[in-house]
Image (cartoon, rainbow, N blue to C red; front, side):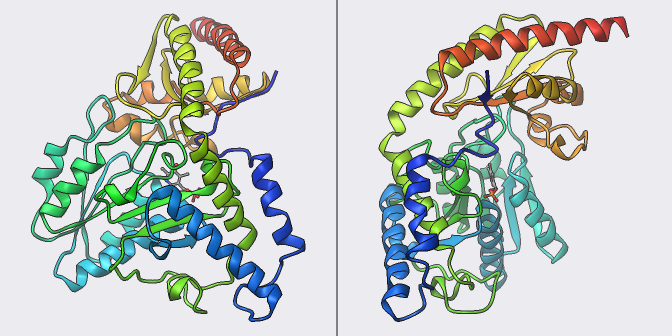
Length: 383
Ligand SMILES: *Cc1c(COP(=O)(O)O)cnc(C)c1O
């Protein structure tokens, strides 16, 4: 059996999305900036895609900028808000300790350029406490950046409340919604956030395509200079097939959101219940509102570094909470922020189920993990 349970890392491009993209490689391959009909076909597709995505998110098409992914959107938003802050005498930036590295490492760079940064803690449940934000805000805070849902635990953050607090202090508010978009309802008409980032490959769209939302009236600064594409805010010939695919994927995800969530949640809860029956396990952020497919668990006495390749060989694709993909044994900054010991963080595994998960696959995961955890613990005892 094969189970792809690492949908927080990336997702499979859906068949409908691929079909929607293909004509834009070989038939409507014009440059959207060209004025003849072939170019205008591409330009019309971009307009349609922007309208589709705007309708899914409840914003104006003109509030969207297409980027190369979630990382670029995060980078551009943070730098734009920092530039705004510099103009307005605000050089303090706030984020949570559990943000993605696209946010954390951009903040590191801004720190080297004279900004001060406060990282908010999270509770053992992996959620930011609005009282901590309230205490951290100052009259010089330019931006607060808190993700909508965490990529490692799935924990959903109280962003409305946090955005209101930021605004009361005169600061802007960004949410990295890369994990949430296509999985949780987002309605920007009725949501106070100023900026949002999303990425197509986390909702069955193609890799290398991102969405940047900036509320009307805010002037973004560019990261990439050149032509006048994306209203001069993101130069470079647009990735038309990718953008078409991204819009198709988001539409598909939004059309089936409730049923997908129900299926994933049911499978996830079954998985959680069965694996929790093993000795020495603990679920991270298990009592909080979570993304429907996420389950992050610690298996005491077993290192993820040992367990992951074994599961991979058995046909199960999952990942550790930690960013040890590149062989770096650093424990997850998210789990550490939640108060886990480095050992517990290193023994944690993230399952992120897809919307096509079956009960047979869940049983296969339970059976395999149960067997391998027992085997590795025994080996460990003998050693
Ligand atoms: C995947 C991810 C990103 C990065 O998105 P890319 O499109 O891969 O650059 C940023 N933030 C979060 C929360 C993510 O899960």
